[in-house]
Length: 180
Image (cartoon, rainbow, N blue to C red; front, side, top):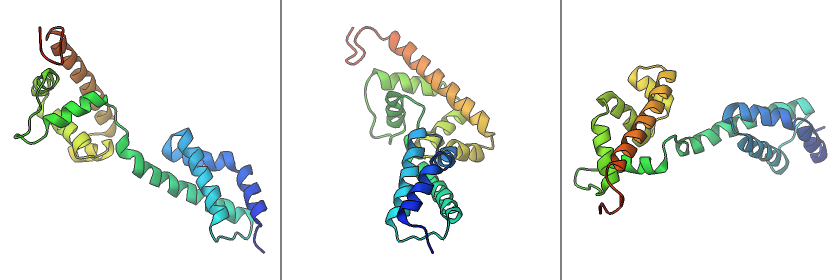
């Protein structure tokens, strides 16, 4: 005999912290882990599933939470960036085709700053932000440890920010139009 809907819901609610915790271990986001738990509960109640006992239900719930967590990471991986949106836009413009060149002091400042960045660092930025690779993939591609990649990306963000701010600070009062 399989568990009733009420028994399924009761067992899931009692295991809520553990199932959400299992999801959190994968996604490292409390709100996402809670959403995943709710999806697991919804699937358990709305799909044509039957569970012989509570241990079968919980086993299924943990596996489903893990899979949902992995899917969540795949969907949100590209959304997570460390660079300010403005800097990402400037970098994107920098690496557009040679025929299409955006104008403006910010882009000029970025271009000058990127000229001072070593080629290996430019390659890292290109792999990470324009080819869409995560840091782990960049580390493998470049033959460098993952922690070293994180440190390099962090240092590059800071040095580009400081360089751009320094160049724009020297430009005068009206940065958008270039007027003195």
